[in-house]
Length: 321
Image (cartoon, rainbow, N blue to C red; front, side, top):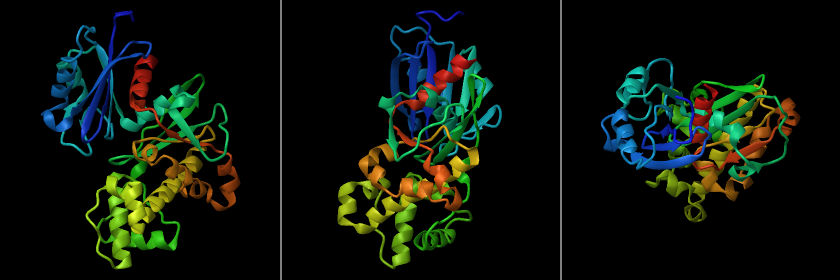
């Protein structure tokens, strides 16, 4: 069917806790959206059908794209932080779609980047993007997602990887002590073990253990709360270390990709930190690469503030096809 004024496309952003769905027009206008709790539905197909039942008078979509927090390596998908498993082709047939794209959540974040305007991103530090050069994106949430875009003529090719599971390299003696402690808990201390919502708790607990004091039963939200940080210096140090480690990984990604188009920080944690993130060691650590510091100083970094960036990426995936 040719794209018409009444046609709708399904877009989705599926995390370990919530599933966000939307209906968009082929030109990208968001027509309807809702958030469903994963735990309320036995399968992703049940969740999609429940969402479509809320669409009102909008046309039934026949194509869609869904971003999901999982490695996508074939037709069978197993979510990393939730028990949903499914076949992409089977799900497409189950919901009666002509086309269904299922992409990694950070592939969708990467595809969204060219469509962000200045109102949906906040610059942190110096640097200016170079047109036609690769772009990188990483973001802490329930895990640590990582991706990038490589230019190919007038198009962008998204990278599909699991960079959040790369080994976390400490950059200070204090970080070394924390990572050494975490090695006693985990067989591999990945970046995600430190730079994520659960990672914030891991960092706090490790700092308490290194200092020989009892750890409070804080959640990540409590640790990152400004009032808690003012009352508990170890919480404030946790946030500082989290931002510094994120800067280390962002700088690594920039060097690996040659990302002179810029590095974007996505996910929900950095935007919530607001000015504290801008004042944190993030940018200093991003540039702290010895002989390559001057090179990194020219690369801009932004925090993505768009609340539904994955929807933009899913729409771009469908438009590109």
